[in-house]
Length: 374
Image (cartoon, rainbow, N blue to C red; front, side):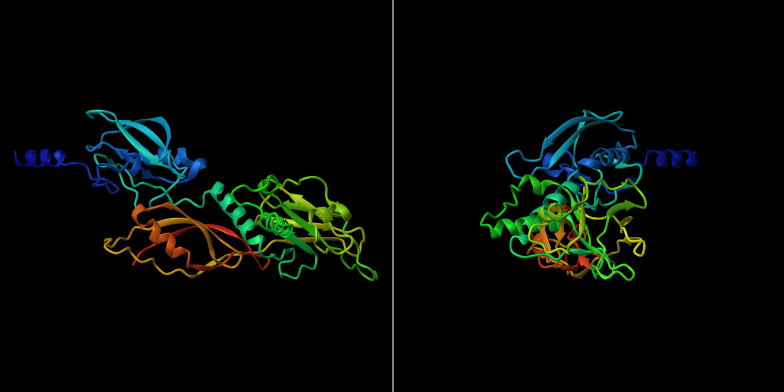
């Protein structure tokens, strides 16, 4: 008899959740407190389904969900965040629940809504930078900074010598256009860039090379960008020489006989290689792989909590661009406690980093920063 009573008592216990459960009844059930699953437009559906698939009813009941549609977080504000609404049911629920999921922000401390539990941990890794926001931000930084200063091109040689030629990534091409416009008294507007600045492209230029006993450098006959893996880079038009190349890089002094090619990439990929062909047998073909060096934080102290705010181990996530000087540019809130957004943004504006380098040249880099508080 005692064994039966104990068995019934264990069976009556509520199942244990495999994730945290919010104590706030508004969490995920109101637009203002949407569950931040992150990932952006490209990964929204998969990440939302992974979150919902982890949920169960309070007694472990399996749930069913149906996407109701999308709606803006706040139609009257400049925040373009779109929320997805899902109708959720499970056996015994009094009425259909509506859960709001935010795929444009991510909270490291993601939990189940009140009244639900998790059958398994919520396995959502922090997403990387939103690609669309990153492109817009780097374009804006190129216009803003390029209007006032000039950026050196990238060497095709891993040692930074530029013996065989140079490369201008999309950032540097836009910055050059912005500088030319500023010099002509017509500064570009980062919010309304010209159509040409919207094109993602880079320019690879090969220089003439001394071959064997030749008295004069030999002009390259061909230039190609190839990939060791993945899709081959797409070239925009035929290689350019002479006046055609000068039109691509107005005002830049290039050695006579140089050849250039435009590719529809913002920068080379790690597996890409430049191949330069020369008509002289003494030169043969030159193969130049790219060498990337990772960036690192140099000064990133924890942020200070606003007066009166309780201590927290939750982080605010901020997407930004590390510029060529290692400064943090255009920081934007991308997840975590909304009450700490201003403190987080203020902190990262003072952070500095060693930027990613390509063949020794600094590269603008989109990042997502996790700001923690002391």
